[in-house]
Length: 154
Length: 154
DNA sequence: CGATATTGATCAGTATGCTGACTATCAGTA
DNA sequence: TACTGATAGTCAGCATACTGATCAATATCG
Image (cartoon, chains in turn brown, red, yellow, orange):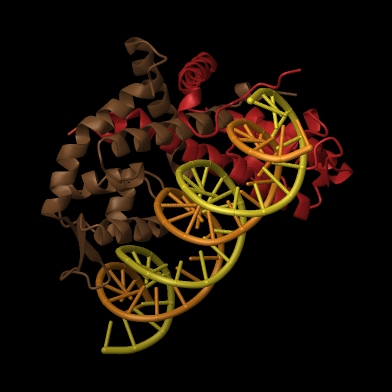
């Protein structure tokens, strides 16, 4: 039988598992309570003020049904706001709050530290190579998941 | 701001997301209904008959609380059995059923196909290198998650 | 214009994964 | 042997992720 360690799918699960654990530990150590998904969403809202949920989902490759709950929690924590759009009454415009901005700023060192820790077994060059290969594999498989990455059309 | 594509954590999530989608699509295409986690558990039970749940968890790096539900579903599908251990009345001994063996055998081509598809953007050499780097990063971070990989002591 | 298709958001249901708590049992030791 | 600590399994609760459905609103096209 093929060993688990020869299965890219298994390795993907393990690496992701570790990445999440490291992220949560670093962020909690900094005194915050924010998940990787919530962080990515919040940072993307800050970079694209007023975007709607589908666009946000496309920018970070979330399923649109997952976004609903994530935004719920960001709003509940006072980090983001969800407003009805005036241009399209189906859509909600997302904004980051001052509190959200403060949180993002203070949390950034912990997030960057987490990225280093999850690569701590690799040299700088190996880390770069790992990211390059992941990017390449992801690009080729982008449309195979229900939540592909979608660039915004200007 | 750092781009998502420079964050190993984000890339890990994306690659895992695609890996799961590909696995499910291939397995469903072969006429089966088994998740990646259920497959790994079943294959490990087959390779280690009579093992208990904690040992199984250690072999594939699951959290022990996650195993309970996974086994529930394998048993419910008639692919595995959970019996009380005679040596330790706290423990359950896990066995694969004939139906489970049949399923594993028939599903293997789909699983292997899935592993190829999720690397389809990479050359053979690049795929090997990606797996090598993932293994190395995982080994260094093994103890950072609640569910580390644990080898069996003979 | 009006029928049809598409889109944004949500919801119900299911399956990982985790934290923390709890029970039952086992192991080691004073 | 009685006490203490560790261990196997489960459970409640929460947060991703997905499938598939539904509703409201918008776009498109005959």
